[in-house]
Length: 310
Image 1 (spheres, rainbow, N blue to C red):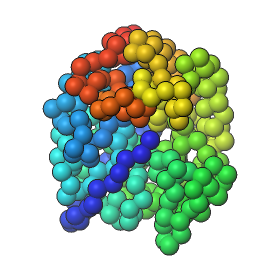
Image 2 (image 1 turned 45 degrees about the vertical axis):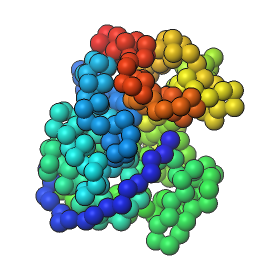
Image 3 (image 1 turned 90 degrees about the vertical axis):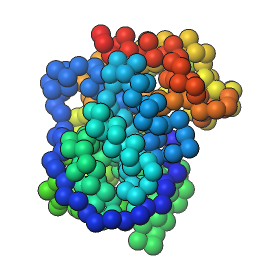
Image 4 (image 1 turned 135 degrees about the horizontal axis):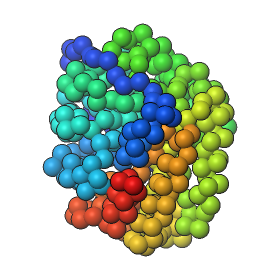
């Protein structure tokens, strides 16, 4: 799934602080299920349900979840205050890069850590570059080229970003996550974990999907990976792009089973559920939420909370 970027107003770079290291399987086990679970949010979308006053109560109803996957924050935009407010309430972010000028991104990440130390747990390379071709240094990748190993602009950006972040003392320890699913071997030298998006059909074999994820991780030479999108929509119909819709009760039962299965596998570092809130309408893409558009919890909230609390 994609987010639309907002324009940036640049300010002076603020010094940053050290970030969290990659966790070992033993450390993951000690941290419990909730430390390996995150939800998708869009704090940058000021016209959306993703306001600070809505997000924190929702995370608490999930049992105190404090990890989110979001697009990288931009200083000088209205969403910045929401990001910082969440971070100061204990939320730790996996930020997805949006292919801006690398010095700008580095500066904003350092500024964010200065405002909320320790609040970034990982950085993810660009989201779905097969569907959102990267333009970098005058080169634009072909649509779907990423799926066939033909993404020179993306790989140039990844190499340059990797060099820049590893040269920065404030950011160099942050774990790096590959772009999802494809070219895992090519990205392997520049990241710490593999990545996949999984939208199972109602009757699909979850164990087989997780086994496939393990294969993708191995392609990059890694032992762990992050499922940065896993979701089950209640909207749309048989022609859905991701998978056919399920009922609210089915969504609850299936997502709880999905999360339990994923967290039982040590090669799954973290699973991210797409997404926290539903949007207005009955379409496929607006109804993945764990909460309705009026912020009332769907049955999936209690079901997932029970899994996370063990």
